[in-house]
Image 1 (tube, each protein chain N blue to C red):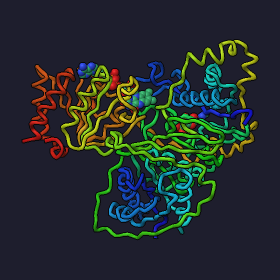
Image 2 (spheres, chains in turn orange, blue):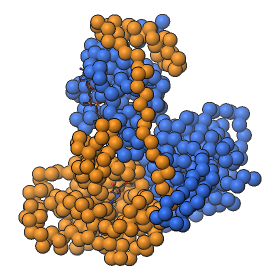
Image 3 (tube, helix red, strand yellow):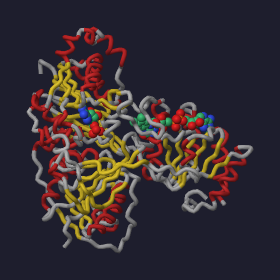
Image 4 (tube, each protein chain N blue to C red):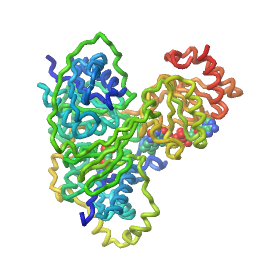
Length: 281
Length: 350
Ligand SMILES: Cc1cc2nc3c(=O)[nH]c(=O)nc-3n(C[C@H](O)[C@H](O)[C@H](O)COP(=O)(O)OP(=O)(O)OC[C@H]3O[C@@H](n4cnc5c(N)ncnc54)[C@H](O)[C@@H]3O)c2cc1C
Ligand SMILES: Nc1ncnc2c1ncn2[C@@H]1O[C@H](COP(=O)(O)O)[C@@H](O)[C@H]1O
């Protein structure tokens, strides 16, 4: 391939639950007040895409589906080294579940056309399903590698290793393919790519930026509105409730010394009714 | 005959080793099937599966659909997808519910199957139930109505401090994946009988666009975490990677034990990710969980709060972990852990 690879990276804007702002005392997230950030897992995916493009040539197109403020993460991705971005933003997408989200993103990838590799994060910190990637791969009829840690490319073949329960699987995959990147892959190298590939100039130059990151709607990608949003979602949230605080049932040992605490604990353990004697006493 | 289709479980099997989640799914499937008045099906794919179908019957399956072909020797998405779809499409009546593990296998396979059938899939459930649902939403009039005997897929949501019940009665099968350690396993009964049905999948060339070069299973701690009876976990309170020597040391006195950790210890590079317990790590359910220097953040809690007994050691008496541990020792872990080891060892040898 003389032109290199056409790479799509799917990135989502999520509430930043690590900062105190917008996180309620009970741990729930106030989605309006919370600071927003690029989904941490998608940063690993972007890094893999950058490494791949730098090694093999081609272009990186970052794609996000979300409300207009999500433009910020596409801009950020371009600063790190992505070449172009699309924000799929449309009111009719509201309340999409994973099947509907995957359908909308699939239509966007089709709209982009001739894509060689789609990178996604392993999962989002708000949706937290790890489903969207494989659901898109099914629609695209692409092979997939989930939980990918390492990869290299030779010709039209990707060599990858993926995490499995209690081990590792090494694979070879034909391009085109969809890859979801595990959080044990290499982190986004902020400073380096910031300086080498793009500068803030891109952001200062609004006109270039507007050409680089575009907002599109369902009409642009030709997606049937009945297959996204509430109508296109086979699942709904029926009810939510708070995780009950157990509180107060913990037997505390402070004692005058650690030794005393441990001794008393061992005594209590022998009366423990949860059946741990078998393993412990 | 019941109004509803059966409850199907896709067995989680790597190199002919049935993963613990399979037995847990069969436990939950039996509860659901009883409420619906239907049977439990297990679908198992692999090669030279030997006693595995019989094991599934002993562990709660009424019927086992077996796809045993050389192409399925190692797990690979597309051949397994083809085989699972072959079984589901061979059924006279589509199942009401299909369950998978929220494992590296289930999370790879289940979304492909759900997308193929264009049906709903709820990820990482910690509880499953059956119940009615009334949909009043005006936004989508096609869904309005009362639905009976829906699958309730219950999962943590929004940074894990809420639980959500996800419903999807509009499409069948209703699908969910469940975390290892979250559901109660079926109690093995070797007198159970059931039917074993063989299905042959017809593969296409495109199913082999992924070639498995090697499946390397380290007999690693990661494996042990899910099977261990005792887990000793260390957190940021260890102060450094050397702290895990203390954790390992304490774990070593128990027979079937493993070493766990909080995410902060993993992020600090003190221990590999495979040891992480919690929302973005593993969900565990050992008989005994000892937490050393772990504050008990909600994201850690959801991964271990189902442990039968929890002992926490923390120097801060206000640490949240003391809100849900069963036993708490307030003190410096470097002082307490060696004492714990000594005393536990003593009482175990008595
Ligand atoms: C989206 C998301 C997902 C997450 N997923 C996970 C996950 O899967 N698993 C997970 O664990 N976390 C997860 N976290 C992180 C979680 O919120 C906490 O930051 C983390 O669990 C804290 O780890 P810790 O308890 O080890 O550290 P800290 O909260 O810093 O607690 C250290 C504790 O050690 C005590 N201590 C210090 N020194 C000593 C001593 N000498 N002796 C005794 N006690 C001592 C302190 O009093 C303190 O309570 C996630 C966070 C987010 C936002
Ligand atoms: N709204 C979205 N826009 C762009 N990418 C998304 C979106 N939702 C999910 N993804 C991608 O799919 C991955 C898995 O998401 P999830 O299934 O929500 O855990 C994420 O890491 C993203 O790469």
